Length: 435
Image 1 (tube, rainbow, N blue to C red):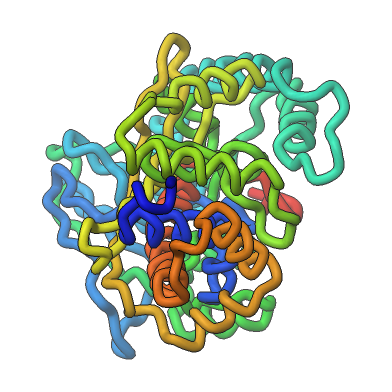
Image 2 (image 1 turned 180 degrees about the horizontal axis):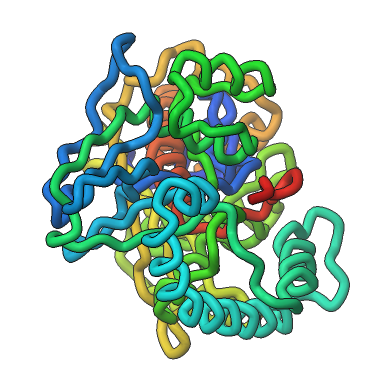
């Protein structure tokens, strides 16, 4: 009777969500969308500052230097890197503290004196927040619990006075600047790497020489992977929402059990690649799909999931919503970060993607179909379909399911990359460059 009441499209959707539940369509595409090993701060999209400096040029072989050049009103030059996330009311420039002390000693003293009180207050606030976060983590970190181990290290290091940071942030207004010359993103990456490595005088070293020195230290400048400078910067005051958003991003990237898939009204934990499929997952998806198809018992289960996460002492959740077009011609996914702001959950950012069904190569569909977990899903479909599910319908479900997996990969990976710009840098490998 159930097979007669469900349309062919409903069976295709059921096959789709069950195939997706195995998590196999994602690895088959050669991507994971999981958190990168290094939670490095990603450079934000460039925006024009109050000084109306141009966006970073594409760069070329003629580029000679890595540092941005800011000409001050008195004609003196400041060499550093314009922070692309600067608010429109100011131009924030990252500079090497020792360079400023040597090149602009009088201004350096003024800037350092002005920042000293704010830095001390920010350090106290940060320590209090870290301690509160630590109280919500396990007493003893489990293997692989990178957040708790990082918190323990940070709290141990922050107990003493605030030492001068390797880099400092200088805030400049419209009246402070006469010109801004920005280098390309490629040159900007070179300067950030040079700072991390503690190379001598990277602001004035020819770019070609700097790139060779960086390569000689085993770092590559190719690609667009984010480069973190957190451990080189002084602590800064952050609004509560910003802090919680960064904490949420860190937890979603590092902790298990904080990512979910939503298909219709059903929300289930995202499968972890390489782990066996939860036996309860299939029946739950089948029940949810049937309820959605029949239009009965539709309830929003997201609040329950969020409440359970909050009870665990976590403030971040990633939910990937999946949708298949009524004609089964396309699939879309939207990955969203939710963060707990203290009294409620808010959306902290999202990314979406869509694919036409059939965009995934047939070879990938075949790989998915041959997997033992997917074959077990097909047997389940046969059992509940009572002979009403044709081979063509199951094949269509495989194609749609693999396409959905591709859309999930695109949306989730894009969101994960953006979250690395919010998450705290847990690596902190190697000693900090000395002043």
